[in-house]
Image (spheres, rainbow, N blue to C red):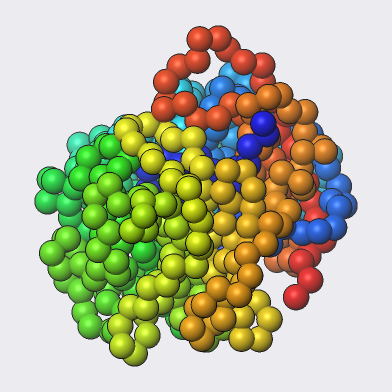
Length: 457
């Protein structure tokens, strides 16, 4: 059966978000299954042959004039490609000196700073820094290794690189320092004058106290001017040990608050965190599936899943209101339980997306379960479910254009340019298999770029 993927498609049992950051100030990867365009692509380009033994999130972004891609090629080497936005056939490729193993956590992050220089971080899962920076031209052939951010001796166990920008357009880089169950969230900021990184905060955003770590979704910038984050705490590398859905917001990524505006002191520890829903260990909640969205009033809403009283997996929403956090179960599934356990990258059964406004007075929430994309329509005031319908998703969009084999999945990532034109990468891989080697090397697959007209409002 052909399976469906999104930028962080597979559920990283050891992973944080990521990749799932939504910084609306710059072109950013978005889920190809969310708001999938109904129109056919205006162009399709074959980019390269890529590694297909397991899925790893690739990266894509645009400048004013160029489109940039970063991926692992057929030989697992990190490769960066660029072309002018108005010249599809004029690709420039550049190979970087790092190679992927068998780990699906080793995602690629990529961003341009205000000067036009390209920054790429990749191939790290509790590993020393692997980062590259170009000159101000943004030419991928000028990419050079960055030996350190702040202190090489302390940058030995890095995972989940994410780039974003603050309200002033300054480039921020965050990552996890440490390992699953024993890690902290670190934020740094790029100083373009000195071309060096500096600590953004005096302490980590969170501190697991050597006993746990936080797995984040976000920061996601809302229309209220705040950056919002949601996270779970994890006691060990085992996926079932996620617990206590938490939340914080910040205007500047330095000073953090609870939903009611009261200040949080950094680093945030479990006892001081704002607990949205005290889901216990083995309660059916997993990292990556705590996704932020917004209603028509700009209020943050977290989509997540947990077990109900009967032990079935159900989809829930959480929204902060005057009386506190309102928690609402929106699915009513019976005889279904995703009973995930253990270490490594899981072959996920569920992907959730952030809530978004629909017709006046309604919210829409998309969920993919067992390969089928579903869309819930809700009353935006009460969060009461109105309908649950099967809808088309990334499988229907791309399967006609990609050569697939049994048990392969479609992976995607996307971005837009300044004119709203949509660029979507798609490629097929084997499903995640706990980061363990296959018994044979599978053939490379095609990486293709699909270009769509701007989405209609």
